[in-house]
Image (cartoon, rainbow, N blue to C red; front, side):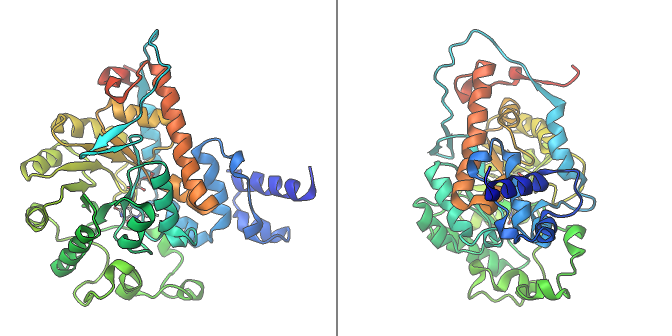
Length: 401
Ligand SMILES: Cc1cc2nc3c(=O)[nH]c(=O)nc-3n(C[C@H](O)[C@H](O)[C@H](O)COP(=O)(O)O)c2cc1C
């Protein structure tokens, strides 16, 4: 091994080692290497987890913490992963599985696979090409993409880079005029679906608070405290009067608000953040067009309830009447298979594509999608389910039953 490769391999080992408490940036500095030299080859990435240490090594501690954290003690981030241990796959044998078909249709549009991109804010924090790199990757892989309201690139530019429109994730804020303006702008940009996030009436993100963003000079070099900091630099808020909003949360949202949104737009309306049968039934009563079972990647409430465990009661209540997507902790093809068997129509991934973006830009996001789709294809071959329609509730069993 030449010197460069052995240094890379060493740093890759350091970055990947869960036992180390020092950040890999600090380690890189200790051995006299700039953190942006901490590189690995994309060909060294064999599963989604392989990207995380590379992303960690490339980001500041504050930015990596922002991406990784949940709320309170981050317990629900763990639960989202642990939930998959509660479900086992029942495989059937002697089925011809030479041809596996991952194609699926969401609300009238066909996609290459049931695995999509969850909306996450501020992509340029992770890579200079930010949302544009993600859009090009989701386009080249023909994957569903939901775009956050709090992006660092406008929806118009993202749709242009993608050459087909994203679904628009709406943070309504406390001010109806802003809600209205955001919906109109998404409509005019050609977005075919609005997905309103309903799981953030409040949140306790203490992991990031520990960085004292409003007083820490390192943070203040880029961040502006208050509403100005949250919104004024975000292109979707350009030209809007922000004086009526105090922060990014929306405690006023209720079912009357959902009705009002339905009246505002003719686009299909999804609710992102539903985790109970009761709310799923109410969503049907209020004419909602689809759901995303989500706990915001453990970033809303530290409920200790995995989304894969919440999914069955929601899909049972919906009973196929509207599409149900799910996100939270999906890292493996087997995870996706379990959700499909529990009645989900699709699955979104959040942090893993941010790891891919941080590590390798567009190519990294593409590789993340390729790897998890490859795993899903192999799982479907193993389970004897050549198409998505073949995956049923019989293909999964609660552990220990
Ligand atoms: C850094 C980060 C930013 C996020 N930003 C948003 C957002 O702007 N809007 C939203 O609805 N959800 C947001 N989410 C939640 C994701 O859409 C998704 O629900 C979650 O990431 C899925 O869990 P996973 O990261 O374990 O895959 C964000 C998540 C992360 C990690």
